[in-house]
Length: 65
Image (cartoon, rainbow, N blue to C red; front, side, top):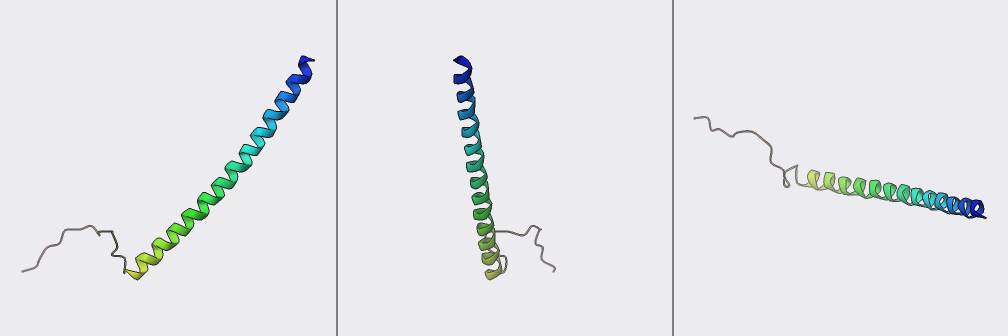
């Protein structure tokens, strides 16, 4: 009887692990899609503002006299 319970228990654990793997895969795909959309909007904003929004280009400004 103990073997049957152990077999059923391991079967339930395996099914649970499989379902969690599928859910984690779906979450990863959704995260990649959302990240791509955010990057796309970042590119559009950068293009519309000529690359001046929130980003400073390095370098020391000197005046030539």
